[in-house]
Length: 166
Image (cartoon, rainbow, N blue to C red; front, side, top):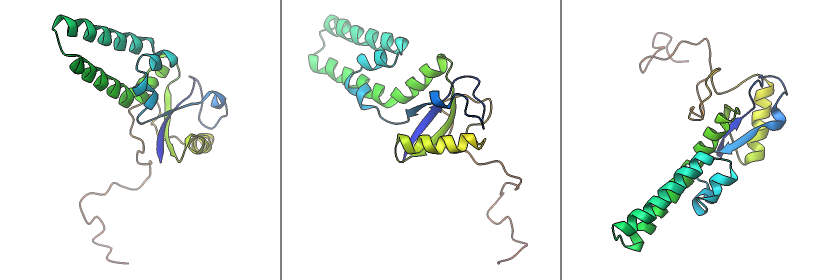
């Protein structure tokens, strides 16, 4: 099961269809394209600040490596690690960029594939249920928070010792 962070435009209300046609699902996991193309991936996803940071680090490695007479394999290893880190953090960076553009994270949903996750989210959204607490717009929200209920929380190992076995 793959986990996706769901982004909707500002003003989308639970239980309504408003904005659902513009829903964006961001896969939470390793992004191979970000790993293989570390300079092109941020440009394709309109992450200009991420592009500038990656570009500055790569240029700095090239200039600093030559100034320090570092072997080519060491510079290549550092660039490989940078690309690996970008592949791991790509989902969070994309969610951050969407949030900056006014498309905040509204839910976290899992599914066998993106279509299944989208179907689950739409059903839950139209029912007025969301796993992300109201007012909390962070992509680092835990995927599955406990649902609100009137049952008192369990304290200790045997909270119902008085009732006996059923």
